[in-house]
Length: 138
Image 1 (cartoon, rainbow, N blue to C red):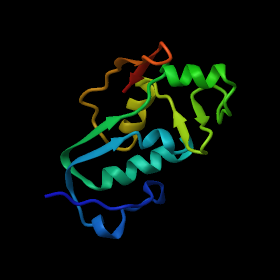
Image 2: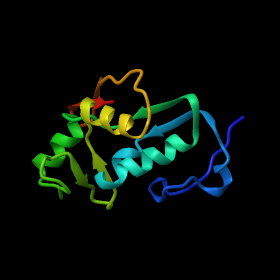
Image 3: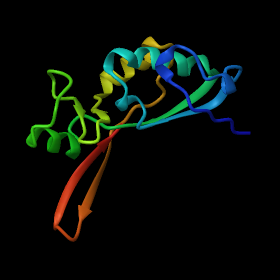
Image 4: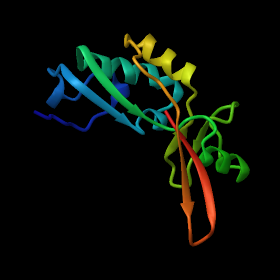
C-alpha cells in the first residue's frame, strides 16, 4: 500500500494525511538539495519520524563535482554558500551538491544508519550541440 502527501519537511512534522505512518520505504529523490543547508537536519528528522525501525530511505541527489555544478560556477550563478556547493537556478529553485561524508553525517545526526552511500557517474550527451556533461549523483 502506498500513501503520499504534500507537505513541508522542514516544518518538523509530517503532513496530517501521513502523520500516523511508519513507512517501510521513503524516497528522497532530488529533495534535500532544494532545501537550505540549515533546514536539512530538520527535514531528515521529519523523514525519520515517518519511517519504521528497520525501514529504508532511498536517496538520490546531486554530488559534488557534477557537471551542473561546474556549469553554475563557470556561468557565475548566484551562490548561497562560500564553498561553491549551493546555487540558485534562474527559475529560483536551489541546488546543493553533496559529498559523501557530509551526506552520511546528516543522516547519522537524524538517527539513520547508513547502509550504503556511493557516487554514481553518468555522461549526458546533447547530440545536437555536440556537448557531453559528466553527471554525478549520490
